[in-house]
Length: 136
Image (cartoon, rainbow, N blue to C red; front, side, top):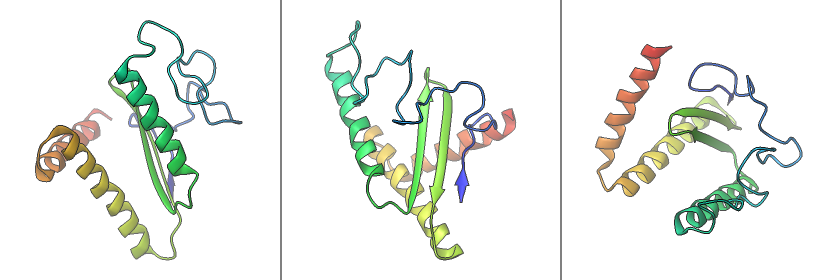
């Protein structure tokens, strides 16, 4: 199962063609170099940028492992969300469990980062999903 749609309902490759097919890294105009590090600029070298670059690098490393399911979401300008989901499974039950495991893991991550309980994050996510549905 592969879902390559943006939150606005358009295909992920609609509009801008920002990815370089050879490297899967952003092409010209991006402020990150091939390693995910911020290029020279006013924020280059700050601790926050270094932490972000480290986490991007970790995410790329995860994609090189033997994954059977993945979800990638990218936020641009604090509001535009592009995402993709892909998985390989032997049956529908395994597909469902993989999808739910990714969701649960994401809820746990957001909960830990925000310092709130899982149910708060899950309820907020449902509210946002409903708002996205209404705006389509």
